Length: 384
Image (cartoon, rainbow, N blue to C red):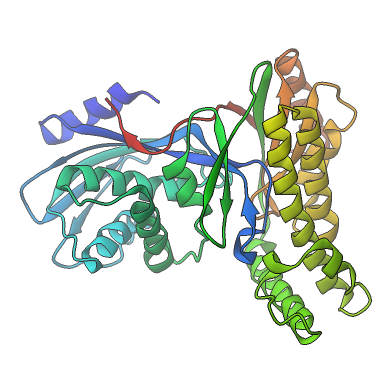
């Protein structure tokens, strides 16, 4: 990110000096569709970010400029309501949630810009919310901790952006640590950090460039199927089971012939994926990245065949890697039906590999493949 360009744009518009804040996007190495089943996920903050230049203006109006879009808007603190500019609703939402907590802010001027690809499944919206939350907390001495800001951001997305997201994205943006991934227990919200060995390895993201219309409706359908499976298990005498997080591999195996086959596949995938996250953490502690990569492939197989949230573009990108010696692991990342694959790649020969997979994707799918390397960084904060 060109921080100086953002500062210069702010000074040009508002004729004063700002403070600078950043909030990163995220990757999720393994643990997909487990969050709303109170399971485990393994995310990390990445070096794609939203950056805010911001300063108070001693009024009751917030003047905001989206530098990447070249669009300006105003937020009236005495009348917080949804904007016609969709991007501004994330900011309005954060301010409104703070106001509901009795934490009122005064007017400010800000310019923001980002390097997170929109629609790539890297949580640009969470970074947008968390970045503003961190900035306002610092500017106005609100006394919020990282967890407070994450929940403020989540509530803003629920109520003003209309997206009923889990907490993983906001926690990732706030709690990321340089060179580490963290296991988030979506039931207790406990966090445990693990080193991610990157010597000689790179994290390569391949963006399909597509979003299929099935995504939102099928997401809700998967939630209902998981809930239906839990009800079957509870009625069979497992009264202590509240979500699939409470179900072991041994218990789910009992229901292969006692459940609707589709529901069984959905539930067994989630139980298996939770176990894969726990196993993946052991591999990270041992520094065994090849074993970690194999778990990524297993995750994709489950997402594609059992959970059925992949698509031909994602499957093609993963299958292309299978006979490539320099790829340790690959899988779809995010809700599915488009977005990115995440790949652990040996640095040697990386450029040649990117060139070949890009050519193959264009030949097979007919559209260009967007790829980028990303590193694991610290979570949101002030930029010195």
